[in-house]
Length: 111
Image 1 (cartoon, rainbow, N blue to C red):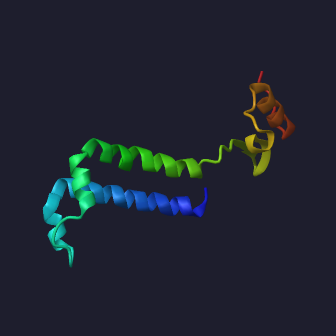
Image 2 (cartoon, one colour):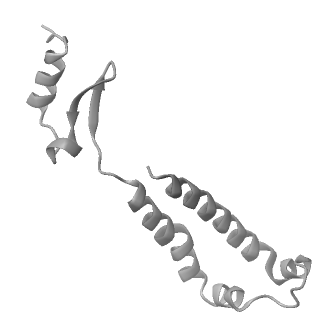
Image 3 (cartoon, rainbow, N blue to C red):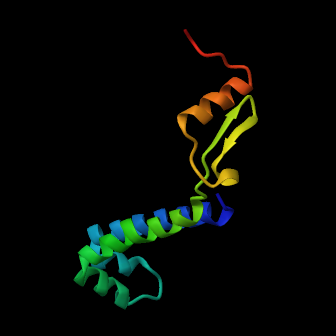
């Protein structure tokens, strides 16, 4: 997973928490922010469209970031030895291939 995706996941979690606090506390929260006299415009847009806010904050943005973290890798290791890699072959293994790969590193079939 690229380093920036871990950072982005942390930022998204903080934004989600902040959004939940905004929804629960409301406009009074903004009085504690120095230099802010009234809530910013995005607050009113969130308040006017709570379903869309939820969908974007909790479904769309995290899915988008996760798509960058997902490499599509499926790899089988035995004692730190790679015996199958979807990244190398471009496909998932079938059962027979997994069994052959395990036998090639010393596993024996049970009776």
